[in-house]
Length: 470
Image 1 (cartoon, rainbow, N blue to C red):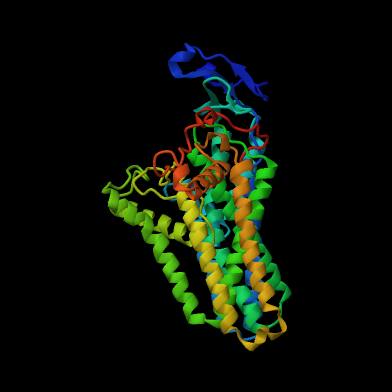
Image 2 (image 1 turned 90 degrees about the vertical axis):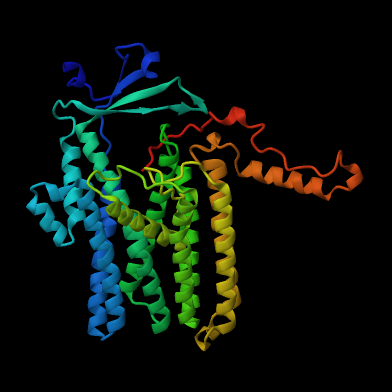
């Protein structure tokens, strides 16, 4: 049992040879990790949660004093509903219902669960490395550098402190997505709509809108990073600062343009925007279920040991609802596979990505044109054609940054069978051959070239990354 414990001076990374033959377990080394990374993501999620909750409470109080009952009721609703879901998620992940922790449960009842969880994570981090602790599991990854695999997979010992912090990080990633798309997104839409209708900007309302937008962008970034980590689970995925910057520009422009388009359209055709939202919700909610029924597969097992088939179905419906809410405002970065245990389809589907952005761009342009022709007299003092062009250009820029990310900044782009450049090149070549006269063609019409024929040597390449994925 002594071999399972790191030594007291094992603070930095130490490489040790495994006891058996490396070929037997497919790994060449075992690494003891004594260094634990600070829980920055937990702290940042807690700050966003508290800031948005406080701003929404102050704004609701201002609405009550000014007798704006409708704005007050909707603001409180979009504040409390995601807050309650956040408490339930944290309680479920940490399995507190089966443990004797009255103080923690009481803090969750007061909607202060993220605060106590953040304090717990900070305490675990401060106490890590001060005493010996055996590792609880071993993580096996393939380390890649300069596009070349550094031998077989390597194994990392995961200690108790690191395992506890990983649980906290995973829980707060889930709550960040829930807070962003079930709370911050409708909150930002509501406050922007109220600002246009009342024709003035309150400082508190502006602060809440800015915090909500930051929360949404952060939730979208979490979705993108989680999608990469799930699809390439066998690899040690690292993200460069340029990748984060590109994703922030991509997600920020995409979400801001989408919300602004919906709000402007709703100020003119209020009833029709409800129909647009419901159609989007139903399409994205039932799409995974239709694919599930078409494949004639069964529900995944062991999502939770204590769940029956009914409980599993309820959980899948909640996941599908969250997936639909994300796709209404931005690309979710994943495709659901309800028959898989991870609930995510791990093979990238470029066709789905292209179809989504094509249809979304068409929908945004259509909504903006309808708003332009049916706008009220309030917009007489605004250059509406310029506003329409700006929104269209901003969404186009979001798509461009998305393409740049996948072509140049994606940490696993060298593992793709084909990338954006390959698709564009092959499409241009195919169009050129189609435009040639029939007599210049060899033996009849040419088929599009095989995109993967010349890329087999790139399947093990990856860039040299320098930052851990958040």
